[in-house]
Length: 325
Image 1 (tube, rainbow, N blue to C red):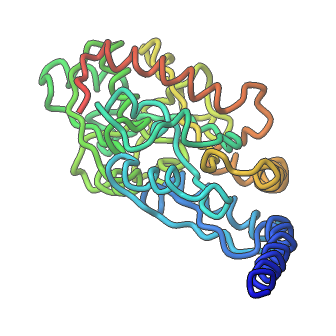
Image 2: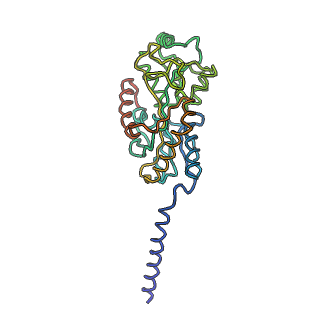
């Protein structure tokens, strides 16, 4: 009799759990705040985009999407947080291209796999890169920079947001195509790099246009040229490096939105729909004004872009003779 009663109680408990499970599984997303990891300091272009997209996601999905800056280690502090997070949509990431592409060639090992640890939701924006200097009189043109670099190999400094960053990659490309020897000075983000350039601590920087444009407009920095085939929509007065006689130095810096691998597709769809609507809406004009080109409708999936650029950047790093750290 005792056994029968025990079995009955166990069966009832199991039935209760079975009935409760669907209710938990169908809990609407999001039901509590979402953490948006940015593996860079506040103040740079990636942080800017992350905060704008987070505001839209908050409005559309009804819960706070809160930016959490985890800077340092060229992404190796913040990015693994997302790679190891529960795949439930409550930890997502806005990342520059370099942490997902160039890092595989710059470092011997990474605490994450950019191709398998994430679902690439969408590319958010493309950014032109621009070569900027503090001293216009001394380094105002590509020719004057090359002359100074060749007269003093390894002495002319350029700032970047870290090893393997787009700024670093641009410097490697510039050296590879011109034969100049520069000195790389890595920082923990684009904002501190620009601050030191303005202060004269370093000679120049290959910066994402949105980070440099306000200082170009204010006269604190001088734009030598953009690293693109044609002039940027948001800064048509800045010539290309090719116009200044430097060929084959073409690079853009995109920013993407990613979630942990195995995140449920309905969750991904909600995040993607809101982010893409934001980029097609009123924000498009505002983003263009600050030097960013929204990219929600590119035909090539972001996951494919990441895989292809890993190979391209690996070849560039190898050609530059850079030894992985």
